[in-house]
Amino acid sequence: MAAPVTDERLEKYARLAVEVGANVQPGQTVFVSAFVEHAPLARALARAAYAVGAHYVDVRYSDQHVRRAMIELGPEEALEHTPEWLKTRFRAAAGNANIGTTGDPAPQLFADLDGERVGRARMKELQDVVRELITERRINWTGIAYPNEGWAEKIFGEPDVERLWDLVARAVRLDEPDPIVAWDERMAVLNESAARLGDRRFDAIVDPRMLGLVVQQ
Image 1 (tube, rainbow, N blue to C red):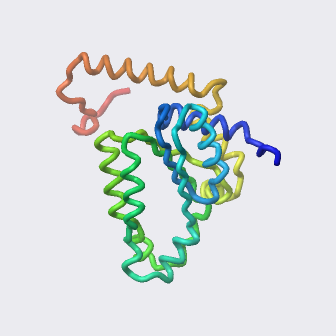
Image 2: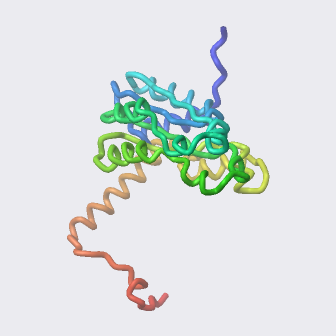
């Protein structure tokens, strides 16, 4: 069977997410969480992660239509339920890398459902596990957006995916000749600025507008 055709832009984007966003290191396991509609990006992330020496890439897909079924028809206890195996999976991400994708492919899917149930349908215990990993700096992590028709429709009122790609590319420097070099240069500027601020040993930095002062232009 022939090798799959790859999208050069998607491969470039995945490499940026892996090497800069999540800073994946050789030997790490890379956990990817994505909507089923984001499968092309998840596959590109897997290729990029293995290319830099990842030990294993574990992809978990979620389906908003399955979530809708739970909200619409499931029992009350299902709304906030977090399976133990899922908490175990995320705890296993400690010392490794996690990449999540965003860009809702069906933003109006829950519009006709009970708003109270929609609001409650979230895994609080899982959020606590993830928050702990992040605040204790025990995980390399990043989130990246995947342009798609549903998200474009919500932003522009029409499914103009290419227009959305242009905006995403500009935001993450994907339109640069070498996005990774562009981010390295940007981070060098930010680190230099942070060092200068640290050297001054300010007790506080206050925006004059917070004091009710008028800043003359």
